[in-house]
Structures are given as structure tokens and as C-alpha cells.
Image 1: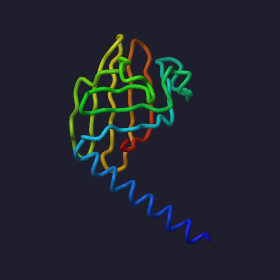
Image 2: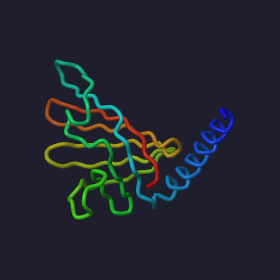
Image 3: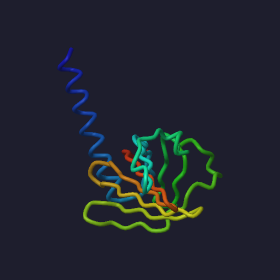
Image 4: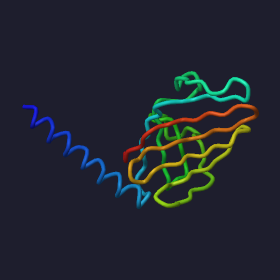
Length: 136
């Protein structure tokens, strides 16, 4: 029984890796991303771990590179979301850039693993978010 579970898990991981690789290279399929960890940083207090709710972020986001749009997963298609201003492909990474409401942000997304680091900067505060994306 344990061997069946192991082989099933191994097959799932291989399939997920293959699916991610095909999506990352083409950038044609929308991504579902889990926001796993958030840090809030300030010049005097240093960085403190926060929940997504503490920093007003959803647990999951939808990234559509074709439409240059990021929005909370499950939000209506008509919701405004966030516009991606720039997409760069650099050495196995997809770099997304944007700005709104007095904040600048960037997402560094690894094409092979789907893992990402996001940074948001505003006046005297910054946020670092870690997560993972899969094709949707």
C-alpha cells in the first residue's frame, strides 16, 4: 500500500513539473498562486511575519500574463484587479512589475519551480511575500 502511495505521489509531482514547464515557457495559461508567507518591514521595527489577512491580501491569486492582470482567486471577472505594467523574461525567471495607490511592486517567478517572491514598497514600509504558482 505504501508503494502505491509513493508511486502515485511521484507521478503527480512529475506531471505537475511537466505541466508547469510547458506553461512557464509559453506564458499562455493563467496561473493560480498560493500566497504562503508575508513579512512586513519598516525602518525601525525590522521585519515581522504576518498573515495574509493582516496585510490585506487573499490566500490565492490568479495571474493572467496574456491579459496583464492579477486578481484575487474567485473574484468576479469584472473586478478591477491589478495591472501588470511590465513582464520580463530573465535567466529562467519571469519578472512582473507594477504600481498603484502609491506603491510599487515586483514579482520574481521561477519558471522551473513556480515559486515566487514578491516585494511591495511604499513610504517607510515594505512587504515581502513568498508563494507558489501552478497552471490553472
